Amino acid sequence: MDFFKELQDRGLVYQHTNEEALRKRLATGPMTLYCGFDPTADSLHIGSLLPILVLKRFQLAGHIPIALVGGGTGLIGDPSGKASERILNPKEVVEQWAGKIKNQLGHFLDFESKESPAIVANNYDWLGSLQVIEFLRDIGKNFPLGSMLAKDSVEARMNKGISYTEFSYMILQSYDYLKLNEVYGCEMQVGGSDQWGNITAGIELIRRTSVNQAKEMYGLTMPLVTKSDGVKFGKTESGAVWLDAEKTSPYKFYQFWMNTDDQDVIKFLKYFTFLTLDEIAELAEGVEKEPEKRRAQRTLAVEVTKLVHGQDALARAEKISSALFGGGLSNLSAAEVEEGFSEVPSATLDNSEISLVDLLIQAGAVTSKRQAREAIESGAIYINDIRYTDIETSVLKLERLDGKYLVIRRGKKNYYLIKFK
Image (tube, rainbow, N blue to C red; front, side, top):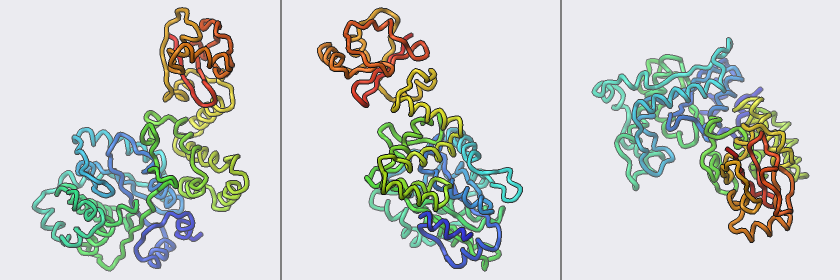
């Protein structure tokens, strides 16, 4: 298999150094490569998923990936792709986040493989003990100011302002590449397209300082993931889509991929799944001929949710989706109700008698008693999948999900949750 061509065919290669040499090197045996992940939060989000999966693809092809957690660079802040200075987080916070991200990376990469075991490293291990005078003399002197100013990540910030702290990020990331080359024999850095300037700076630093200057170092970037509607990938109305199930539930994660536009779904299948290109081509045909069936979107949601959260979480997400969009709310457990309706308007009530009209007002489904009566009598109100048209219905006699929930639906898509104490 031509692994580099596979990456190209999936649209995963945006920039690279010396394609001919890189192809030959990949074909001659295992290569060690790395990608960095700065701990800017207590979890990675799906913007980090593409580089993680690229590392995984390299490992499956027999190469050795290094996942570098930026415990040191995370204290500085990468200016790449940012319009303004980052807020600097306390050392203890970054250290805690770095530990969580390290654990997340272990979910995707195989650190126990006998053939090509993945490596996880933290750059604070070497950046945290640097002596400033020695660093400036031995490393800083290799960075001409003109070439640093010409890098896209710096040039884009010159008009709006960039501190020396963030300006120095390029030097620290380059030093990471040098250290990983010295310790692990790392020959390539991969990253998003916004990292190209940092990657090439690292290659140049190794060329200037390495004992074996004739050995070629490589760089490769992936494209910026974009959506056809112009909305930033990985963002929803409620915020970022996280890889941590506590921050974005598997159900919401699954629905994010289910809602992929027809114009994006094949590209995302190539990026984020390990389906063969032939399998994806078959799904593309379905998008053209039977888009209403959304087979490609469902396949994407299934594959990525299973990859990130596992088979059990996928089954739960599918069960909740089936209940919400196909009926069957009575089959949901309390945890599934909470997960599936975590973002809908909700209210908590005691067990005192309340009219159906007042229930709709308490839930926020209507704004007045008259509106409530009209909605009930017109057949627009469903409670736990059952339509109610009698305004005299006793709320206390309604059968509750798991003994304590009522799910109200007004019309086709407006949901409200009532929880009884």
